[in-house]
Image (cartoon, rainbow, N blue to C red):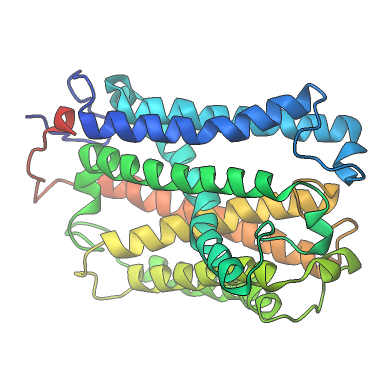
Length: 344
């Protein structure tokens, strides 16, 4: 039996248990379709890209974006190895926490929206690609979207479970106990930050909610043409995670800090990742017109929405990381029971 006693203490080297091995294989297998398609496109192949698609005309920019996609999903495979091999427990905390935070942020809206889009398509008798309007359906064949997003769902489920096992073994002592443990600073600063950040987060959240309801205020002509039930579901997912972020911030900022930390931490961790990572991705796509989002020449409202959510997400994550670092320096008063890391 092994036990981690600090945020950086290594776990003795043991081979991975059967559960982690299976989850790791599932996660890696789920990455392969996306990586294979991206590699084919970088090499000039047109598989899954219909004739007349704008993606056949973007040249060097498209190659660069596809190459970036290959690198990012390959890093997911490296992350899986870190979560399943003993050497992953010896990495610096930030080196595993940062990519896990980004992966949580990028995959969570897909995990929330894609099944709803599939269900809507099944009920409405629509066999087309999810999360796209008429303009986007011309970019790629429907099977490409479905294959890639199914892979993302499998990645999210496998990585999420591995993350829980890894985090429980390595950082479990930080996740238990009250929001405000004995010896920590007064929560006044935390409350002030939570109130300010919540008010800012609600701004892009309200805009996404408005777009989810079908309004096209602030959208450019391409995005207006792409509006559909599926894009509304996607916008609704962004609005939902903005609300969950606010809930997590307010729970974490309660003056009576004896409530458990885990629930607000999960909400803030996930919500800040969604805000920051998807804000950056949507802003990039809006400026380039690539990545499957019809948004060339974005409006000021679009760029402001994406930029505010990105910057706010980064600020929340940075503030939360600072609090966790201080929490890790406090004396431990209620150690976790030992766990058999190598048995799972």
